[in-house]
Image (cartoon, rainbow, N blue to C red; front, side):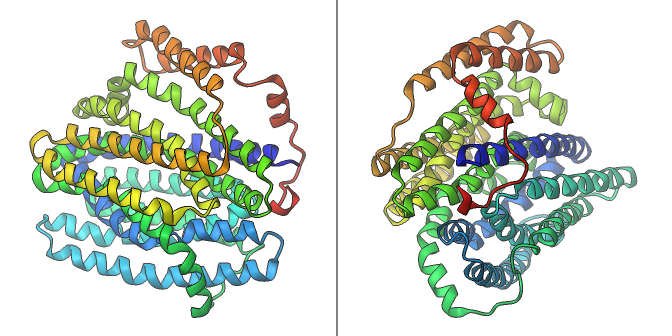
Length: 484
């Protein structure tokens, strides 16, 4: 099976799993917002944002470095097992220490006691998610993303059942976040039990290998810290200077963003070992083809989301979170611009890793993060959640422009502008067609928009018949990266 088919298959499996898990996730968010209300959901979102800051520090580029190194040494089972077990051990130690410290540090913050207790309840979610990221890296290397999709779906079903029980029994916020931890634990267990069949997760205290890995990962880690610091700093700053009810309204829209942007990260998780292997083996043509096609794919997915949300964003949030969160619709319309940038920028940032240009990007990530966080501090106290949303768009746009320019210039790759223009026109036409239906039940404009966009894309020739046949002619069995 060639790389295009393998990438298409794994992405297709992830999309199928993501459709199911996203549907469950939307139901969970819908139940949470209605049960907790704007203030309670604001408290829940603050707990999430607080721990995500520590999770960003904890990552330190290890996840991406693992996938990159596994791709470079594809087929060397001894090295793969040694590397995986060493990084997994390091992650257990660092996650246990840092996240526990975060929970206790939260006790001295000027928050209500219910929120402080929630820090301990949600601890398990971030701990097992941190371990799961290493396991998923192995799944990406072996192109076993159907396992990742299965684990996520199972975790979401458990979460849904737990949230329903909490609502029926009136258990409150602390119980809700504890159930979130149980769902994350189940997701992790499914992944690791299956991944153990083709990778080692044994305890491996190996400081020498850690030094080698950290030497490669630290530029990525610092970049991620500054690149994503603004990603959650907005919610935390908002929680200090605005009512928790406003935090809840903003976070409901932001939650939709978080659900949507998992798709490009999953896609690029499969893409990274392929382009790393191609660049390491000086297969420039394959690298350029994969990168160029990936930009087109992400734009193909993002364009209708952005255009459609401009028309029905308020209806989406009213449907998802309830009438108390209808103001989230205006925030979602703004944040969808950031979603579009993230779809493109995720491809660029992973290409930067494959090209080993992380150190060069460091200065740009720092500058963008500093300017954005300064904007948060200056404008959020005045303009609240609207300032937070527009500054998020600003930051994501800057990151995408810089990473894309460097990735294209370094690899001498070109974006297919002709396809980009066609996709943009198709998305705009789709938006205009669903405009008269915006007041109908939400499913009507979404269904009409999907059908119209699909037909327009085929008419415009954005997706060829040969490509469609190639995707659906995938043979049984998933190849390892060394078969590409």
